[in-house]
Image 1: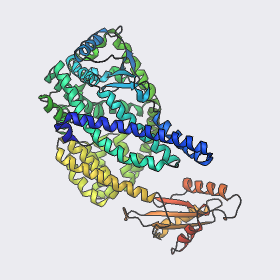
Image 2: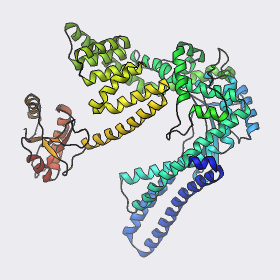
Image 3: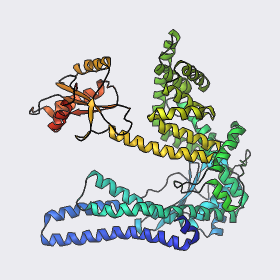
Image 4: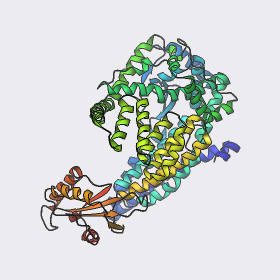
Length: 601
C-alpha cells in the first residue's frame, strides 16, 4: 500500500475511498436485508424469526448510530484574542480553508483539527481547531504559524473528513463486536465474517493515507512560512515532548506525596525558558533520539527524520526567549485562560491525585517500619529490595537506592530480582552498565523478559541506536505474546488440562492446611499443580473446595460465601485457580481426586 501510495497516489486514494464506501455500503445492505426478511416473516406469522431478526437489527442500528462528541476546551474568539485570529484569518485565506466553527484552547501539548458530523454518516460537518497552551508556550510566533498552517492544511484538503469516516467505521465495528460478544445473536456470525476480513485489510490500506496526509500538510506549512521555521517547529515539538514526559510532569506529580489535593498550576507555570533546567546532555539526547527514530508500521505520523527530509531541512531546536513565545498572541486574555485551564486540570486530576497521596502515606509508614528493622540488623533480600524501592520513590532518593542495590548484589549475587532491580535503575539513568546486567537476567527470569526488553528498547532509543532499539522492540512483542498466553493459561482450568501432585514443601503445606481449617463451612479441599505449556518452571495451582452437598438447598449461597472467604483470607503458595466443586460437573472432583495427595483438608 505504501508503494502504491507513492507511485500512484490518485489510484491509492480512490482505493481507500472505495473501501470506506464498501464498509458503509455493506452495513446499509445488511440493514436493508434484515428489514426485508423481517417484513416477510411478519407476513408469514413466524414470530420466532421476527424476534431473532428484530434483535439482530437493533444491534446493527445501535452500532451504526455512533455519536462523536465534540471536543472541549476554552473557547477563543476574535474579540478576546484578536492577534491570534488575525493570524488564523491570513492563513485561512491563503489555504482556502473552510470556516472554523470554534477555536478551543486545551491543556494538551498538541494542535489538531477535528471535523464532527452533525448528521452522522450524512455529514454536515462542524470544524474545530484545538490549540494546546503548552504548545504555544514552547514555540516562537513563526514556528507556531508553521504548526497552524500544517493543521489548516489538513482541513483545506479534507484530511479530517476522511479521518472521521475511517474513525466512525472502526467504532461501528468495535461496538458490534462488543455487543455480539456480550450476547451472541442469531445471524451475527455472517456479519462478523465480513468484518473480520474487511477491518484488518481496511486498516492496513488506509494507514499510509495518514502518513501521506502529514507530508501534504507539512508542504503547506513550508509554502506559507519556510522550511526552516517548519523544521524548528517539528524539532521543538519532539524535544519539548520528551522534556514534559521525563522532567516537567514527573516533578509536578511528585507533589502528590505531600498534599491530598492538587495545588499546582502547570499551565501557568510552564515557560519554555524553564527548559534551561534540563542539561545540555538531556537536550541533545532528546533531539538525537527524535532524529534517529524510525517510522514503524505502528506510526500514523512519519518519524521526524522522514518529515525533515521531505521538506529539505535540518533539525534545529530553537525555543523562544522569554516574552517571545506564541502564547503572547493571546494578549490580555492570557492570564484568565491560564487560570481556568489550571483549575480544570486540578478538577480532572483530583481523584487520581488523592489516590497517589494515600498510597504515598502508606509508603511513608512502610518506609519508616523497614528503616527501623534495618537499624536492628540486615533485612532479608525481599524486604531489602522493598526498602530500596521506597527510598528511590519517596525516601532518600535514587542515589541511596542505587547504593543499597549494589550492596544487595554483593549479598545475593545469584538473585534474579536483585539483579533486575539494579539493571532497571541503571538503564533508567542511561548507565551502559545496566545493559549487560539486564541481558544476563532475562534468560533466567521469564516474567522479567517483557519489562526487561522494554527497558532496553527505551534505553537504546534514548541513545539514538535505532537498530538495537528495533531488535529489542521485537523481543518486547514476542515476550508480551508469551506472557499473555501464560497468564491466560493460568486463569482457566478445563477437564482436558493436565495436572500433577502439588509438590509443596511440608512447612508450606502445613501453613496452608491451617488456614483452610479456619474457613467456616469448608468440607473438603483438594490441591494440585497445573501443567502449563508456557513458563512450565513457574508452578500454578488448582484449589478445589467443597462447602455443601450437591443436594443441599442452600448450597449456592453457602458456596459463594466460602469461595469469597478463601479468596480474601487464605494465602496460596502461588498463582492459583479456586474452584467451587459443588457448582461444577462431578467430573472435576473426580479429576482432582485421582491425583495422589490431592486432598489436603
